[in-house]
Length: 328
Ligand SMILES: NC(=O)c1ccc[n+]([C@@H]2O[C@H](COP(=O)([O-])OP(=O)(O)OC[C@H]3O[C@@H](n4cnc5c(N)ncnc54)[C@H](OP(=O)(O)O)[C@@H]3O)[C@@H](O)[C@H]2O)c1
Image 1: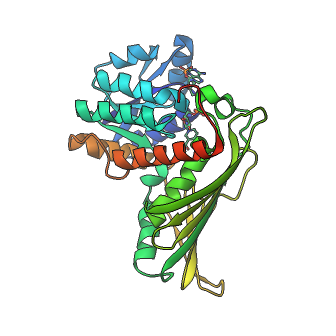
Image 2: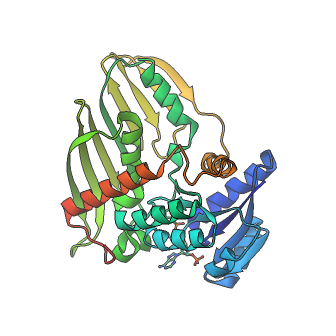
């Protein structure tokens, strides 16, 4: 059984706790082992509420735990880089929430540390690990919609009230929180051979972070992708992949549940549902278990090079918009 401990007792930590409880009940493949918070009382309360076996006052205490197999980092993006390095130095494997780090420089350092030490580090960009990815790939590869020409997708939630979304020192902005899913969706469908990028964003007043992003990617092979991410409102979170013989609709790109294929007249050709899931996070945990078994320092579902490429792509977009973090 993979013993997973969580670093940071916040919002997404609760979803991971539920996932791990589900995995323990389902087949005993993983469990929620420990929870670490900067505040010992908060860690204890979390452990009691979520059923963690151990709780740690401070992140350093977790690093000393001999029984933790994998640390799931669930703090704001700006802290990820240093926390990954801290875990790797203690010999602990890491599954780190997206965005992987605050910028590419931090990602380079974190990944170099992982590779030098031979310790597993992987990005918790859950859509890369989910079954929907292979289902969409198969539809495209078998020519279900002919030759793919264009993609559009959007992701939006009204989350401007969150400090980690609006504060530059926490690596805020729509891009690193939401746009990252759009960029990953485009990469999974159309690949990485981007010839040109055009983009614009709406920023918070006073030169603040990006809050709505519009990104168009033009690929070497003639395909295009149109991406929209916003922290201002909820959107339909839909992905549309257009081909010469129909299109594929993905609902939703943040956790695909339904994939519908249409013919060129808009008639439904077929509808696919993804397998029943606990929360959808179990797939990234399973990938970590496989990587640990084979003593790999990365997961094939999201190799280090791809994590780094996406971080560089987001640095480039922020540079186009003039969105700068204090640690850049
Ligand atoms: N995969 C997904 O679908 C998904 C969804 C939501 C979020 N996320 C990612 O998960 C990460 C955490 O998001 P969240 O919404 O859970 O964040 P959150 O609740 O705001 O914060 C998580 C934890 O980080 C620590 N923290 C928060 N603010 C801090 C600060 N200013 N200084 C130092 N530590 C701080 C706290 O840990 P302690 O006080 O316990 O030490 C807090 O409980 C982000 O990278 C986000 O992108 C992923």
